[in-house]
Each structure stands twice: as structure tokens, then as C-alpha cells.
Amino acid sequence: MATMFDSPPMTFPELKRRVRAGEIDTVLTAFPDPFGRLVGKRFCADHFLEHVARHGTHGCNYLLTVNLDMDPLDGFAVANWAAGFGDFAFRPDLRTLRGLPWQPGAALVLCDYTRDDGTLVAEAPRSVLRAQVERLRRLGFTCRCATELEFYLFNQTYHAAFASGYRDLQPASDYRIDYHLMQPTRDEPLLRAIRNGMTAAGVPVESSKGEWSRGQHEVNFRPAEPLEMADRHVVFKHGVKELAEQHGKAVSFMAKLAPGEAGNSCHLHLSLWEGDRPLFWDARAGGGSRLFRRFLGGLLRYARELCLWFAPTVNSYKRFQPGSWAPTRLAWAMDNRTTGFRVVGHGPSFRLENRMPGADANPYLALAAMLAAGLAGLEEDLDAGEEYRGNAYVDAALPRLPATLHEAADLFEQSRLARAAFGDAVVEYYVHHARLEQQAFHDAVTDWEKRRYFEQI
Figure (cartoon, rainbow, N blue to C red):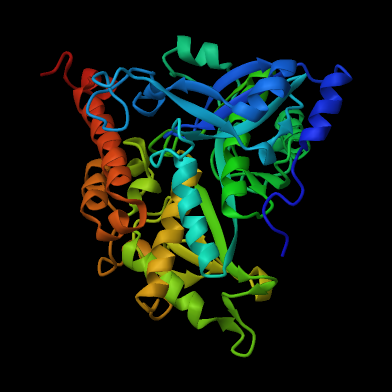
């Protein structure tokens, strides 16, 4: 099996050559924040080559404490007003260098967030996933995984959507377009730009298709090892938004946009390997191996406790509705889309599909949670039990997923596995983020309340 970054999107010597040739004049240095957004700086390419590539750069550590509106919030140990909100370092991972075809003259490099002594900031999402990948490596395993991202496409620009208060948005199609070939042709100029642009940027795309709801699309990636897959995922989300803007449109990766429409999922496909040998497949039995059953047993045992990293926002939990294509109950089955874990494929392609995450999930954290739960299944010799048969939506005997962000944060905070796998500091950090988000929602006065109570109460 090829190892991670065997074929980097752009080598450092290639970057030097393209800068000298005048093809690239700007290098974006970015790190994925707790929400999975890319934040960072743009450097003149010459300065990046001479200084930043070797020594890195710095950014205010308040970036770990802000909400989505960039307001610094209180109560974090990793960074705070009492400590003066100093700097952490951005350490470029030159294996992630890539050109950005939709930004002429620009390249991007992803960074690890480190302290001055070079140690990783444990709370940073890339650090969290690195730790779980290292656990796999020590066991002699590698992991192949892929994310499937869904999004809604609208005919308004982001500016127009904002100005309208996100009301009366026009989906890019007039009716549901799951597997349709005709209506998505309207959007083919953008979807072609996404497929080709992403592949050129080192985010290899397999396919795109219309999804179940009006204006909804799905893009599938080629599999990779976890850190590379998460890096590709965040570059994709960032780039798709920029490409949509360039085409006069807007996309949304919200988990649930409307009560009567399907949510945006991010199904995670995963299998373990030893070299070129697929460890989830038992060729003699023609099915899942004992290691596969133990790994899946860990996911079934611990997925509720780690759901905060599959569903990180208030909106995430509105996606978990019966008959919505998103799971509501924990069970596993072969090719059954009503269960939380769907098992698909045969031989080397045999793999788990985790259907819990929405498109709002941070891929570094979601993949780290899957690996931590699966490894716990191996360590504790758990078993997945019998395959579920039937409609899991209507089976009240199955464990249900958390119903709210508040419940998920409680489960995560109380999880012995989370604390053992990620550390107390990481657990407290993400629980505090969730508590603050939940409080912000609790304090808000919504349009629903105004419609309900303005005149009639």
C-alpha cells in the first residue's frame, strides 16, 4: 500500500520553480480550526520560500477560543485574556503544498499548530488526529478512509443570501435530483470546475451526483490515509465555497437546512490494513474478519459517547430524523441505510460506512473518534454481534443517538474512553466549546418564536 503523501500535490522544488517562473506569487498558510475552517495568512511567495517554509509563522492563539463570528470566548485553559492571548506557531507541513487552480497565482500549505518549543498544541484538530494515527502505526496498522460530502447549491450569491437573512433562497434545481442526469446539467459548469479543480489541487475526486433534495449534490473522493483525507476534505469545503462564489452561486454544508428536506451528510468510509493486506476481510469466510468485528464492536459501544465529534453543532441534531436518510439508532447491517453503521464492499473494498456525521463535522475529529472507538474495540475484545435486519428507524429497542448538542456534550464529558484516548485537556476544551454554542442558541430569539408569539400571545 502506498504511504501517506507518496505523491504530494506539489513538491517544494516544484513550488520554487513555479515561483521563479512567475506562475505563483502568493502562498496561503493555513491551519484547520476547531470548526474545520481554514484560517491563516497570505505570504508573498519569495518571503515564504526564504523564511516561512523553514521557520514557520505565528498567529494569535485566540483562534482556538473564538466562535464562528470570531468573538473570543472566556473559560478556555489553552488561551485566554489572563495569559494575554499570545501567539502559537504555524508550522508548515510541506507535504500538503498544492496549487489552487481557482486562485490564479496561489498555492496553499496546511500547518500544524505548535507551541514555541515545537510541541503540537494538543487541542488543535490536526494534532488530535495525528495522535490516533500514531496509535495505529504502533500496532502495525494503516487506515484507508474516504469522506462523502453533500451540500446544497443555491442560485443566489453569499452576499445576496446574507442580505436576505437567508430567506427565500432558490435551490439550483426545481425538484429532487437524486441520481438525475438532466437537471444537474444546469449546474455542470460549476460541478465540472469543482471536479477538475479539486483533482488538480491534489483532492482527487471520483464522482459527483445529484442528491435527494432540491439543489443538493454529493461529491465522492478517492480513499487516502486519515490525515491526508482530512486535509483534502477541508481544502474541498474551502474551495467549493470560493468556486461557487465565482459562479454567482452559494453552497451550504449545514447539517439540516429545512425541516422537509434531507440533511447534508458526511458519510465516513474506513478500513484497516497491514501493508497491502486488508484486515477487515476474511477471504476464507468470505466476510468480515474477527478484527473487523472487534473494531465495529468498539464503534457500537462508544459511538454515542463520541457523537459530539460526529455532530458538533446545535443544527446537527435536527438531521437525526426517522426516514431522513440520517440514522437515529445505533446498529450495523450489510447495505442498510437505516442503521448508523452500514457495511459495504467485498474483498479489498470491504469497509465500514459511518452514517452519523453531517457535512458540518470537523473531519479530523470525526476520523479520530472513529479510530479511538475502533481501537478500544480491539483492546477490549468487543464483538459487533449479529447483523441488524429491518428498519432501524422504528425499532425502539436499539440505542438512540443523542438528541441535542447538550446531551452529546454531557456524554463526551463523562466518557472514560474520550479522556483516555484524547486526554483531559482536549475533552474539556471541546466540551466547553459545545456548552458555549448551546448557550448562544439558548439565548437567541428565533424567527419561529416571533411568528409564534409576536401577536397571539
